[in-house]
Length: 305
Image (tube, rainbow, N blue to C red):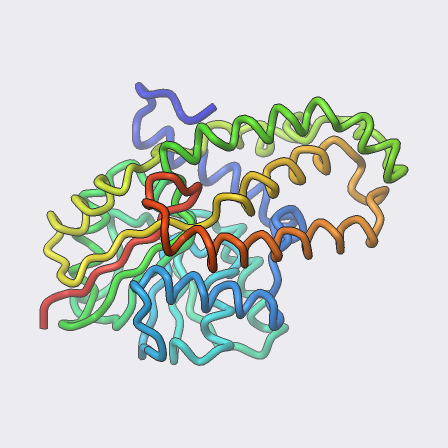
């Protein structure tokens, strides 16, 4: 379940810090994060959709909010979409993992442990402020959006992807329940061993996963945040319906097994099938259905010149 409606901002930030510190070393494997051609293409497409289809754009200095292990930012840096990167997160563990990955990829990155509502940067320092699956963790979004605008140079862009929609948040419950029901049969089929200790019980940090989410958005919520913060050229869209329903089912059954007992053959099938459904969503559903129907929302705007 999400954080309690009565939870204080301090509690929410503490829970997010402890959970993401505990999850950092296993995070890439858990979510199938890739820093090769596949990951780069995924990220390029997400940013393109977030920006409302403005293809071919590149930016100078990029600031990522809630960088995690670097899925979004390190792939954009490899693509040359941003020339330089400052990666921020509330979790020191996540930033440590990101820095190791960046070093392995031969990328130069600045990191800063900070809260989104109080960024330690000068006014007009960046050309792009961006993030993936982070806004729903931030307690005070109005204050955060004011900070995003402050540190952007005139004409700079803001772009966020991977934010859960209210409808999509409810939609995910069905594949999760289905996954729990079919998990025993799935383990027998793929010859995987049952997990001896449930994932959420492996450590205090893992047990906090259900408390780290604060918001699920309607598109109107993101439009209001962009408008009230003074951004122009605002765009809000939806992304992934079939892919996320399938992905949550896969994630649920896989979490019931010991990770080392799940075969490479299954993992390859799961990943490839997820990518295939992403293409169906992108080509057939996203151009024609309202943003409210999708699991993820994307948002962008531009600071007036």
